[in-house]
Length: 219
Length: 137
Image (cartoon, rainbow over all chains, first blue to last red; front, side, top):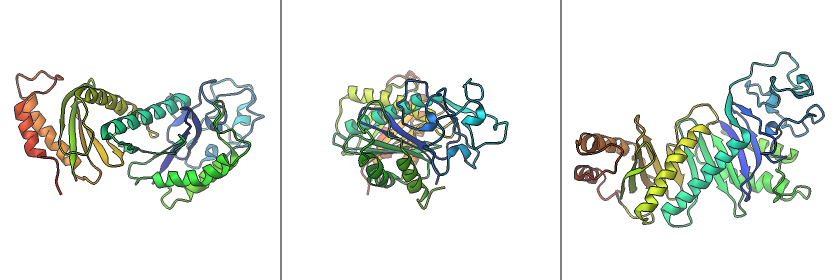
């Protein structure tokens, strides 16, 4: 069972965390100013000193060097960054870089907002239809399945998997009670409810990576 | 195993047919159903854009805690939405039969304007024999 990506949203409707594993279409980096810093290194807008900000937050198995050939775009060869391309992608020491794969067509910040909008609308619809305090759990299309777990404090954990997956709500709940509580809630250096910063940090990223890769059905 | 309701949505997103069967969901006014159908039409379009693996169909099944919605999209853009309990496995086949009934009783009706609300006794009767009261063991 393939897990594609994970989004976390806070109660201010901002995307505060993003991680992906098997994304097929390359992700377009977000436009400057539309995304909070500290969501994910991979989707942050280009900064002029990318050579200096080398990956301190890389997962142990960095998606940049993924063996499946999927590249999460950090440096587009056509955009002009002051640092040389070898400084941006240190893993691929072989020049030239692989031919750019088709992008998803949507910058990351717009995609994150679309995901949030879909979730919000579906939650409202489910609540209206049932008339009680009912929660929307998941939806399935022909190519992916989206699972949602919402905490009482308004944090929404969204995960996209292949369509044959069973409900991953318990996994999201494990993610909440495990890495999230440990490395985000109990982290004194992390401002959780800020409107200006995401919650990307090394421990949380590697913790979720470990948790999800450790699942028996992870591809 | 219960069927709670059936919606038919035209390709512009307007609700053209709505009917409730078993109890289990809230009773809403027809205006509220219209709004929900339009919302669902939009959501269906967006879900096909969010796919991590290129092109995808729109949402096919939407699950909540006590019910689920199965959406059948025809080649002409009409959506048939069936609201059932979670344990119901027959939603897809029922939707196929509803589509056949639609083709017979609605599309072949010379007085039925396409994309307009469906007011056909023949269609109602066919749906009643198909679904009955909506409750089955």
